[in-house]
Image (cartoon, rainbow, N blue to C red):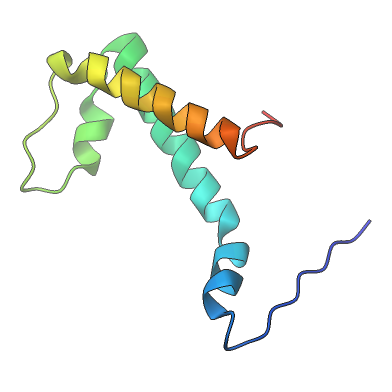
Amino acid sequence: MKAVLEFDLPEEKDEYKEAINGHKYFIVIVEYLSNMRAAIKYGDIGTLNQQLPEDQEPLTESDIPAIEKMRDILIAMAEEKGLFSHL
């Protein structure tokens, strides 16, 4: 089976870039969810803190409940759009 996507370039340049980079978006989301899970399950907020811009205050263990809520929201949004159905 083959699937062919066609774009009228340059008019649909943005849509084309979204299509060819979709796997990169997916990888970023899955990695971020994994880091959030580590913070929630093991209290490991180090990886999330490494991703913060330098001018941001680091996360602490008191932020874990908010991280858990944000993770739940992200998963719900992704599932609503039909993502993660194959995992």
